[in-house]
Length: 268
Picture (cartoon, rainbow, N blue to C red):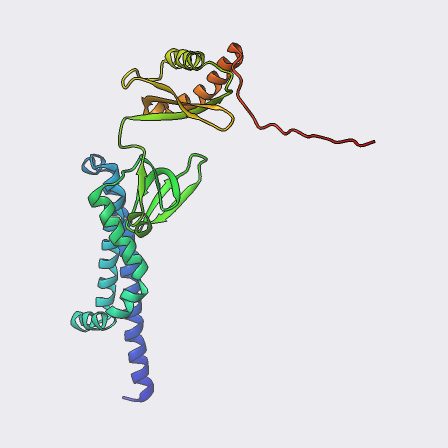
């Protein structure tokens, strides 16, 4: 057999293997998408906790795609023992190259296992704040109140302090109001308490708190603490600020503000 014939034979065999690899990859990835779509429509999948869904979906999709890649490599004729040996030898380099991704994967496992938050919770963490919309293998997705998408690496959020506003059904609204020293303490407390009592969203237990908290440099500072359902927090917060200011105006209670006194010496 001549050199040209050998070259043709090798080229034909390589072409067949290449076509086989392409077919395995194309068909395999399409099957992965079909399996994913059917799984998402199944009754058993619908009943799974939403927080776990996104993580399991990512894990399953990556696992199936990895199986497709291994199958494609196997069709080339490379023995799996040789392939495993090569992967093992390159393991250190791969580990260093994927160090960040592996940290994010570990962070995702911790989040799913320990459940510091779940899909639908409003949280602050890793310097960001928003509603959790998805917890994936490597990233956690948030949506901010002004409708911005924030994608946080799982390692960052797993290693930072997280404030979860969705754990408890109620929250406390804390406000501070300053009035002039000419105002009578009992009158200020009465005006604030009347506004609080008329707000139907404020819970009566625990009892609302209205007290003088501090003698400021130019004002009397009153603390107001009321408990509300978590969903009513911002509505009560802004309503109290507006209505207490209006009540102060009706009752002639002054809110102090900085004054600038200018003394001019005119020497004629």
